[in-house]
Image: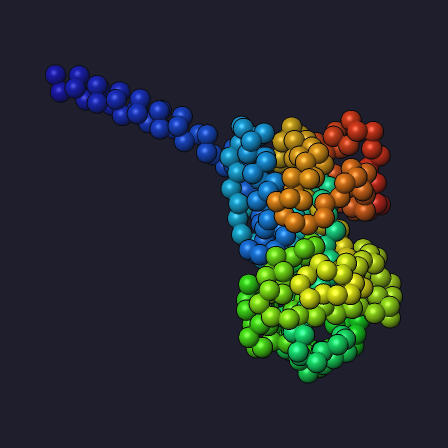
Length: 333
C-alpha cells in the first residue's frame, strides 16, 4: 500500500517537473537576445531601445533584454564573451580591438561577433560653458575635462584629440564621468569641458543648453590633419548652426561611423531581420532617437573592416549591394 502511494507521489512530482521545465524552456539563454545599450542619455541608449522595440514585434521567437553598459569597448568585450548578443560600437574601436591595432596592440583580441551595418555617424562634440572664456582646444590647458565613461568611445576620442593638441596628462586633468554626471558638473562649474562622441542631436547636450549657455569648440585643421593621418577612420564633419540652443555658428569637427554588431552565434534569420529593420525603418529610428540616420543601404554597408554576419550579407545581396568590407586581414584568429 505504502509503495503504491509513493509511486503515485513520485509520478506527480515528475509530471510537475516536466511541466516546469517546459514552461521555463522559453526563457532559456538560447532564446534571449541581450543588447548592450551604453549609458542613459546617449544615442546608443536610445538607438538600442528603438531597435529592440521594433525587433520584439518582428522576431517573436526570442525575448530581448537590454543591459546598460559603459559604451563601445564594453559592448565589444561583452559580445566576445557572449554575455550580450548585440551592441553598437565605433568603427575605429571595433577595428582596433578585433585585430589588435592602435591602442590595443598587444592586447587580447576581442572577437566572436560580426557586423550588421552602420546606422549613423557619430560626431565629436566638445562642450564648455559660454562664460568660461574657453574659445579653443588650446585653452583647455590646466583645465578639468570629462572624457566620458571608462571603456567608452568618447574616452578614446578625447584622449586622441588631446594628444594631437599636445595636451598631455600633465597639462590637463581628465576625469571619467558618464553623460548625466558630465552635464551636472559642467553646469555647476565643477569641470571646465565635456568630450562627447555621439550622434546629433545629443540629448545630454540639448538638455544642458536649456540649463545654461554653452559653446562647442572647433577641431582646427592642424589637429584634424594629425588625427586623420594617424586614425584613418575619422571623417570631416560639421555640427550645423542651430543644432543646440544658442549655437549660432556651425562647428567644424570630426566624426566616425557606428556599427551594429551581433554575436557570431546569432542565427542567420535573426541577423537578417535586424539588418532589414535597420535599413528599412530609418525614419522611425530617426524619430525615436533624434539622430540623423543613414538613408542609403550602400553607405550603411561601407567603411567596415570586420566580417559581416551571413544574415546581413544575405540582405545586402538581395538589395544588389556590393558589401565594401575593407578588411584584408582575414577572419578570426
